[in-house]
Structures are given as structure tokens and as C-alpha cells.
Image (tube, rainbow, N blue to C red; front, side, top):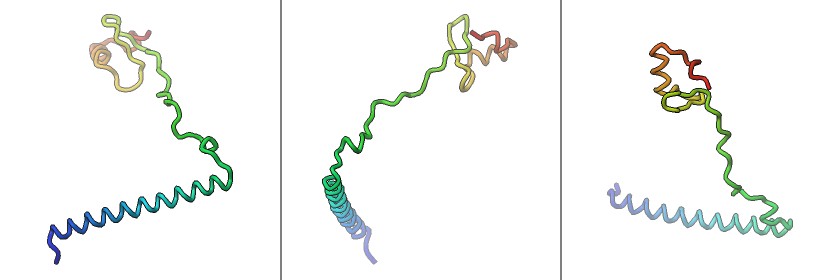
Length: 99
């Protein structure tokens, strides 16, 4: 039975061998792709770019509720903020904070 150090050595050797094989396969694939591009007259521009501009994060939602004392607002989405929750718990209606 192999010792721990021997197994670690074998693992390291296999990792290096796997990395060399990976690089060789990538080189072959890249070469094949370049040959096909030359054969069909395809340019990088024809392929399009994966790197587009920054995508928008979505539209912002206008606030629906406002705390008149502090000016804090809430859109009505997500968890109710503490200032509004405490007011509702205190007996005020949520609708009284509508903008």
C-alpha cells in the first residue's frame, strides 16, 4: 500500500499531466476553429462579441410611501421598512403614508 506522501506525489503528477493534456486539446480546437474560419471566410466581427456594454440593472421604481417626519421612502416592494412597520403596528394605516 502506498504512503500518503507517495499518493500526494502521484496526485501532483496527474494534475500536471491533466493540465498538459488540456492545453494540447485546447490548442487543437483553436487550430481547427481558425482553419474553419479561414475556409469559410469568417471574421471575429461575424461571430459577434460576448463583451457587450454594461447591461442595465433594470428600471428604478418610484417610491410609493413617504415618512413625512424623516423623508424616508419605500417603493412598496420587498420587506416593509421598520419606520413604516412601527407606524402600522402603532395603529396608523399604511395608506396614510401614500405619496
